[in-house]
Length: 77
Image 1 (cartoon, rainbow, N blue to C red):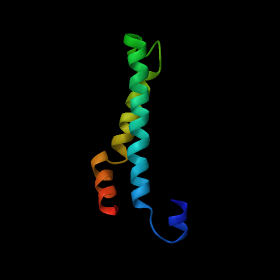
Image 2: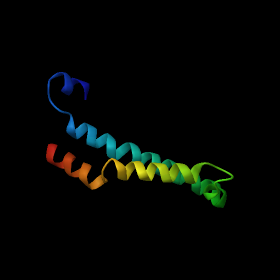
Image 3: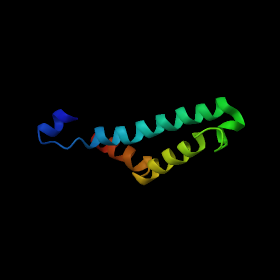
Image 4: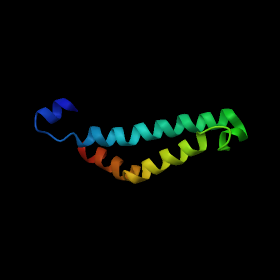
């Protein structure tokens, strides 16, 4: 992405890819951790996983829905 920026081209597709992939992977990892901990994974007293899941979900929505970023990727590719 830095090469594109240095060349004066906006790296829209690359930025959109990161905005979709990183939070989705984080959500998957947190979800797997909740599954491994069972009911304790949802308990705020036992683990921070429920709070982390809520935070990553809000990040996915606050930065724009995945559909918007996927549309940007499709237009650029």
